[in-house]
Image (cartoon, rainbow, N blue to C red; front, side, top):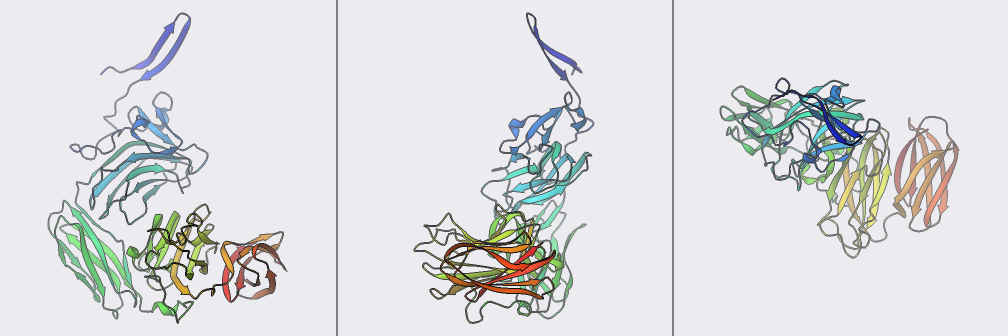
Length: 517
């Protein structure tokens, strides 16, 4: 009760140590969202790091004595990041065992960022999804980050909430007044933000979570779209709505969910052009083993981190073909599980079309041989904003890694910021039918004004290099015979400044790289 602004003093003989001590009230700057519900964040005033285990990097408590300008409310706040580097700190709240499936939660915190953006994220909120991230840049001012999220039908193995600058631009942030509760206001959320269809994809489902509504939920679709059911209960917890496009009526409208004054609109759009108009498969006489080559159904893909799907309804400029494309955002991986798809002692070739931004990603396969379980085969590609095909070839061993045989696209230990994905293929090949290029070690780069290829051959083979400019004009073509093993080849042509496409062909199979000088 007594205001204090003084010192605690320790004295022994002539030795003295002084600890400044100060008190303050938070009644004017901290008001709980819900007064009668416990805050899941135990230390809502961010006073003690002991309540925030499991974080990483630089984190420290600052207070009104040593750093008053960076405390929003009360006695303390927590500093995140080292003030120099991005990805330099994360403040985590353990949520394992505290979240419930198909439940809406409201999270709010005060945050002050310097030098760029930070993110509030939820890990394990949905076992089928990557982290849920909300990015904020307050430009040195205290601001509120206040949002609602809904957990999935099943949670991840562990759940965390975090504030950090991983894959962000900020270097230091201060956080205060952190709250998390089951939402009490009317909530009506859907598992999709938009839906889209094409001639090969006409039917889908989405989940609805609702709470605290005044009445049942009506679901309506525009002409050409049917929805089932058309009415849902007010307390829906992951209720399933089926959607069907008739395949002929062009649609660019909304599916609408309404309960009282609460309304949610889901954009829905269709494209009448078949995927085959922009997809030329590697083989027409072999079955494509990828269950969903056009990347329409998220349920058929796995992975980790920042991965998702875009559509012509929400991001038309980044969809290569049909109604959908996949996307890996920052650090993440889009995977196709090959469990029960690939066989032992069999050769395969996989291809996918990729557009990378901000650096390189890799297309690879793991778990194809228990003996080599730790050594994925992959091809690295940096398309610099262009859609290009990338291939990987592999032969399975005597035994496969149990329950973990991914065909993946990610930027693990690479530089890429974003990758868009479409037209995924996988074919079984006859024995010894694959080209001799081992994609595990294959890269193209520029050194001293010349293009250099570094690659690995399984056996001695003829290798052809064709260089085009960005307009498609042929610059040069040359062939070499390379021995088995690793080879570094400097091509003869001097190139000027600009963008070039390099085609590398071994035994009739080609891969492409885009380079910039």
